[in-house]
Structures are given as structure tokens and as C-alpha cells.
Amino acid sequence: QLVQSGAEVKKPGTSVKLSCKASEYTFRKSAMQWVRQTRGQPLEWIGWIVVANGDTDYAHKFRERATITTDMSARTAYLEMTGLTLDDTGVYYCATGGVAPAIWGRGALLAVST
Amino acid sequence: DPVMTQTPLFSSVALGQSASISCRSSESLVSRDGETYLSWLHQRPGQPPRLLIYKVSKRFSGVPDRFSASGAETYFTLTINALETDDVGVYYCLQSSKFPHSFGPGTRVEIK
Image (cartoon, rainbow over all chains, first blue to last red; front, side):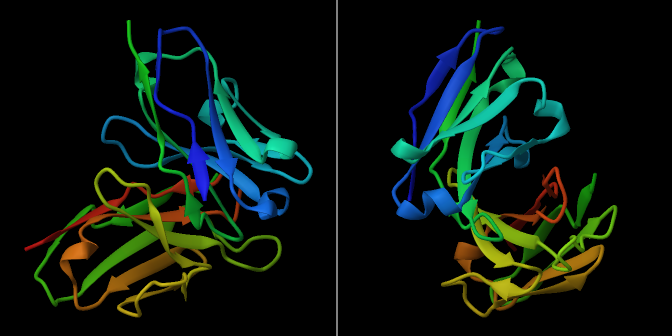
């Protein structure tokens, strides 16, 4: 199971840090990815982290603004997004699995509003 | 980077009939290890996506055999047989063979 942090309301230009806690010890052997869905749009892959070694990769459009990290002792992954705009409003999911995202968090709503 | 497209974007199917969705990649999805990491996911309104198929054609645990998939290289299909009411929603293909990973635009399936 993946338990995500709660809804956030942010102003444009600010940052947010979302969390995703794994219930299983297999967290260390996994890769955690972040996906978002904004205003009725399709799913959008943000990036991922290989928990064991911290290797990350990001979609091009998020490379300058997103940072994915983990705290292995807390079995938690984080997504930090900077320079928020109104277009970042949406639901942010974390997901993990072996060769495909089999386990998903329930999503965290991020509202960016003036 | 692979760009994923899906057809159709919308499908209206009668209960008990079949639906077929295609997913095409702008480049081969055969990864360095020789595997093809193409998945299909289903999302109902207000819910997170659910994995149906991984590695082109393997059904995830608990997915009924009404769902089948096939394909190779750049062209993949998902078939849903004997459509049920729970099958409505949006179906996405996802490529995890190459970075960055990418989703298709989604195909909305409704009951006719």
C-alpha cells in the first residue's frame, strides 16, 4: 500500500513537497514513480527514483522543477515541485511495482490558486 | 523520446460486445535488456489507475481473462471481450522501456 499526504493549496510561484509512504519492507528494492493528472487531462509521467541507489529520471518538462527523493528509514518517497503555476493544479499519484506500476497511492490534490 | 498515441480516443460499446484499443509508439519499445515494457492501465472517474497488463501481454494478478493484449516493437492492442459495466472509464498505454516513460492520451470507453 502507498499512503499519500493530504491536499495542498499553494500560491503561484511557491513550492510544494508531497509524500508517499510505503507499507512494505520491499520499499528498498523498488522504484517509485510520480504521475499527475491535471484538469481532466490524461495521465502525465513526472519522474521516478530507484530507491536502492537514488537514481532518478524525469520527463523533460519537469526536469527543472521537480525533485524526487526518498527517506529509506521512513519508507517514504517525496516529490518536490517548485515554481508552481495555475496549470499545476491537479491530482498527483505515486506508484510502484516491478516492471510496471502495480500499486498506486490514492492521489494528492494540489490546488494552485491566487 | 517515445511518443505514444492511441486510437480510438473514444469508444462506445454495447454490453457483452468487444472493444479494441490500439497504442502506437514513435519508436521501438524493445529495451536494452530485450524486453518490451508496455503496460495497459484502466482508470475509473475519481480513482487512481489500475494495472491490467504488463510486458505487452501479461495479465496482472486478478485481471479477468476477458482482457487480452498483444503487440511488438511499435504497435500494441488491448482487447476487452464481453464488456461489463465496470469496464467503463479511460484506458491508457504506458511505455516504461525508455526514459522518460510516457503515457498514451487515453481511450474513453463507455456503454452504448
